[in-house]
Image (tube, rainbow, N blue to C red; front, side, top):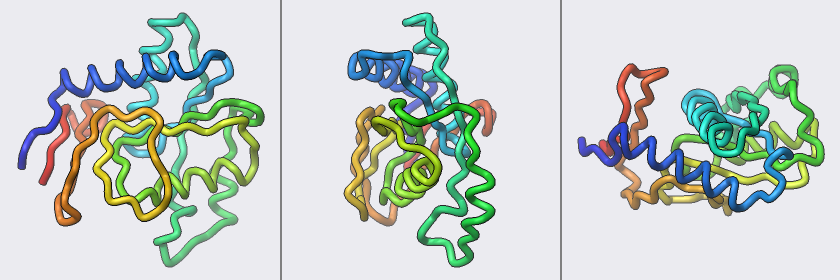
Length: 173
């Protein structure tokens, strides 16, 4: 086990991602953050707070469970998935920023894209991830990355966030 980011490193990374989101998107009021459960939603909340502190704009925030949209699940129940992805915010013609903790094969993000596009047509979809560890199986790349960490396929990245784990850090196992 090796610590890759401590609490300070995670805070700096999420702040940098927040600044990059502001720089890349001229119409900040047209953005909707979509955090992927279980840690992406926590990171999205932190980014939302950072952007509010910087721009005095409270971005809408949605949470997404992609379980039923994954292509690597044997029992895919789309009727249940469609029922569970009723967003409170209208995503049509918005810039949607998907937020997740670790970008690896791209399959979680593919599932998130499917969940979002079933009922809405955003003008643009961007991706923010705390960690990009490589090994993509799909042509998906992050727009805003906290830290690139090259890994071997037998290594694991574990993100710990205070809100869930009562500790903060990123470790490689």
